[in-house]
Amino acid sequence: MDGVIVKNLYKSYEGQKLDRDYVLDNINFQVKKNEFICILGKSGCGKSTLLNLLAGFIKPDKGEIYVSDKLVKEPSVQRGVVFQEHGLFPWYTVLENVEFGPKLSGKKNANEIARNLISMVGLEGYEDKYPNSLSGGMAQRVGIARALATNPDLLLMDEPLGALDAMTRDNMRNELLKIWKETKKTVILITHSIPEAVYLADRVIVLQEGNICCDEKIEIERPRDVHSDKFLEYTKMFEDILLDAN
Image (tube, rainbow, N blue to C red; front, side):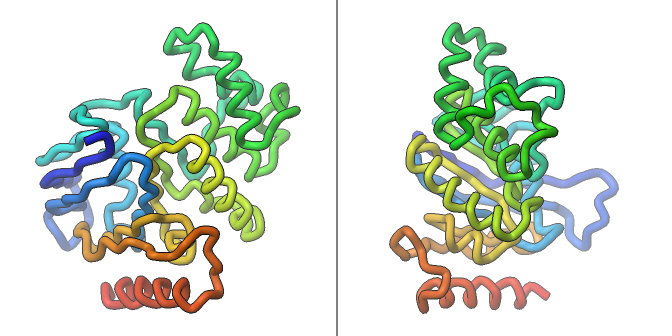
């Protein structure tokens, strides 16, 4: 399978302060190639742990993760990661930040790759700027361009819009969808925002106390109207699921 397979995944931490044995307990799901998945859940449900496992930053206690039929054992350029804080190198320009991955991989056309991606995320003309001169939304776009620069099979995003103000966040949701459509990447995005998940995702997976309690396909055509009855129906459904977790 070209997408993602998560099989019988368990993860615990030494000294964890939880009323359960595992942070993630027997997690199973699949993601098709080019699918946009949102993982939704409250703090402490295991969302970020799952993303770190998918990225290969940490190892599971039990179980397996496959991305494009390859077993995930460690970090790889085939899995691009975007965090809530953009994490750009402050001593590098926008261009140098985006070039970094392809150069490290020995790509001779790293400059061309970087310039094309900077243009795609709408930052043409900012190539020579440094991160401290960019707005939060602009810096996050550079972070997305940098994650895409190694042409990964899977793009992982951990609350990528969480640190942005409301207006920038709304604009960035549309930017994310535009980038996803253009690149045709498989995307897994972690969020605690129910409207964000419903707006972005093909499918929403809800984590609750380390388990998947819901895996729901969003049957709404894009672009989605956040005020439509169907949108509000999905939002209410996920709210009820999360409220039941109390």
